[in-house]
Image 1: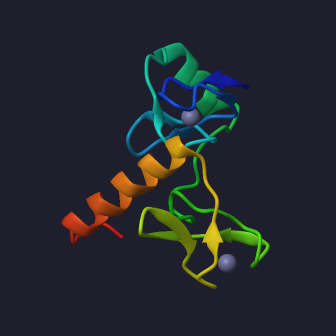
Image 2: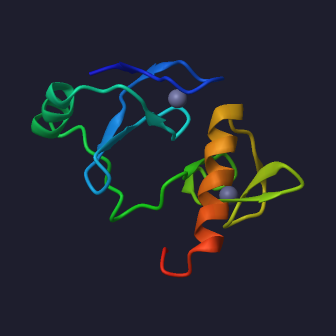
Amino acid sequence: MLLNCTTKGCMKSSEAKLDKTTGKVICEECGNPIEGISKYMIKCLDSCGQIMRSNTKEPFQTLCKTCNKAQSLYIKDDKAYCKACNSQVVVGAAFFIGLKLYLEGKARDPYVG
Ligand SMILES: [Zn+2]
Ligand SMILES: [Zn+2]
């Protein structure tokens, strides 16, 4: 089911996924959590299998047109690049902010990733 993103700069409706480890619902478009999701809705997502597979996949992967598959990204000079082939990957502004926060958080916490 489609949910409306609450992140500034995104606000798109997408097949948002439930992250069962945090209980948050993550927007497919930008990768940021969507605020104000009811418990009832979270139950619905859980029961219909709209769940993030965060154990098998790193968050903030996106399709690299050069590799033609989903790849992890890194940031250099405020642009996103594919970790596998080092091509620049064009991502939305909201996705980029989320990616940046994620990478910074990971760098800070040695126990993550
Ligand atoms: Zn979004
Ligand atoms: Zn690539």
